[in-house]
Image (spheres, one colour):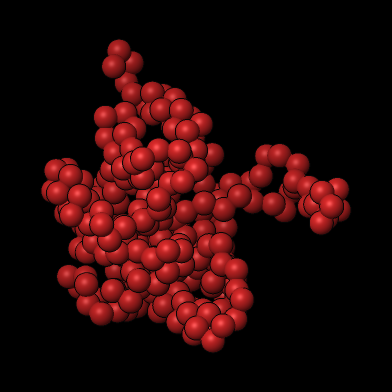
Length: 249
């Protein structure tokens, strides 16, 4: 059986309040490029990814088109759409746009790779390994084993429980799902939210677990695949970027 169509949904609609900057974190400079450039470059180079939906703030769409897509010649981005106030709204907007024909070719029975635009160290190898896992398990997420001991606190701030660290993973992106599965799961989520149900959604895997009852496979990633959220993260990312440069640069 041949390869199924794969669409990346890159989320770049965050305001970056924790960055304490007037510039949204995904547009801040890392090295000599915007942070968003790095994940789009991995998508562009990937043999797995066929096309991309880029989700950003509505007011940022002209800037993204001109200063990132046109300037750097990204060809796989088929659509730039406006995100929502919450992450799940941005993903839902992308899934709806896909279903409504925003792609050059439809992706009804392929896979969707949902990735945070503020994770600049996405690699082609990780896209390949998550694709292979998605083909086998239908749903998977990039993740790394937790290094620290984790404590569960009670309402008064005292330790209530210490879970076994060997079972704990820190989840990253990309999170990869069969297109039809994740679309149906989000349809159920949105319907329940519109009925007034109080639901907490922290990532796409949780939507899949809660709304579709599908087990999600963990795919071991790299500790380098950080999400840039604070000024400290920028400094860490700059150090990682320096490690990637050839000697003498």
